[in-house]
Image 1: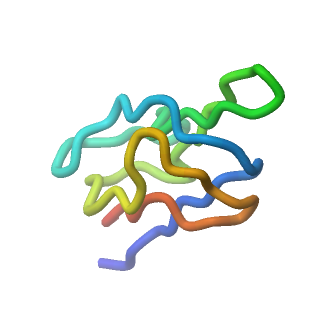
Image 2 (image 1 turned 120 degrees about the vertical axis):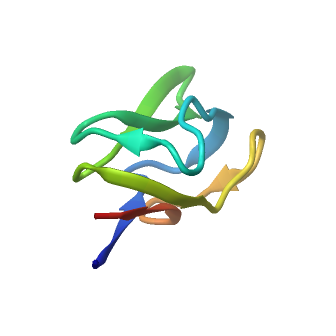
Length: 73
């Protein structure tokens, strides 16, 4: 099965990781939240599947377009 890469659309600090590795993720489910400009921006899953890995931790600083997770479909 192909892997789906999940990237953030904004630069900022990871402030929450509501999803768990190994759990089922639905299309559009929130995987992480990035704090940018005093707002919490969700990083949503582009497809449904199983969350294979999360590549960031709380308080990590991420760049726009950075890979944050991988979903196995």
